[in-house]
Picture 1 (cartoon, helix red, strand yellow):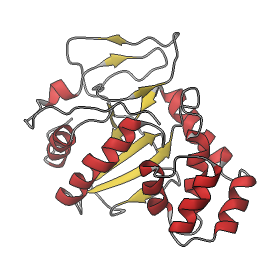
Picture 2: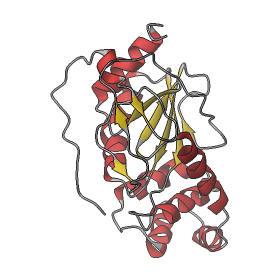
Picture 3: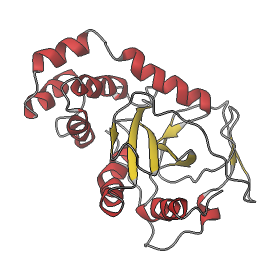
Picture 4: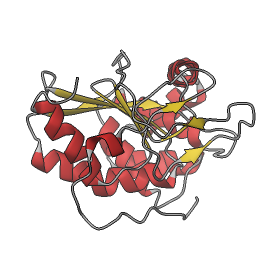
Length: 234
């Protein structure tokens, strides 16, 4: 597992236009990106051109699909995350930023997790995503999700069964689910959707359709959420 980490700046208020930096991707995500800690799949053909002047904020109608979510179904803010269980930046965001958002906005924010395994650099990312979906069959998606990000026993077939055992799940059922590759199409579907949209790195978030790239610190999410709730973002 990679050990690189993001060092967040000292807490301060982030000007919104500094948060929403426009980036033109070859495959189409036009505006609204801020780059921070992120894992990027090698793709020499998809070089990005970064513009300097802020442009109109663009929202993308990214569907929730049938993916796992945390938070009220009627929350005013929906954060859709495309993520990878082997991405160290994703781990850091879930361990440090998401708990703060839950604490400050318990009734206003919902998180939806969609898979974007960077298989070219993370050999266990796809199987881990499938394992989490298998655990979801036993109503333990999020507990298992946390186990995968902590990765105390690593990632791989034996680790997936170990985590299921630690959570008191039916390990035989989870093993059957994994061996049958029941969620292969689900994981690949998430990945293909995001790739066609222009996503290239993890984590990538869509906050009420506004794209943010990378393991942004709490202050960035807090700034955008507070202004979105106040109706200040077009």
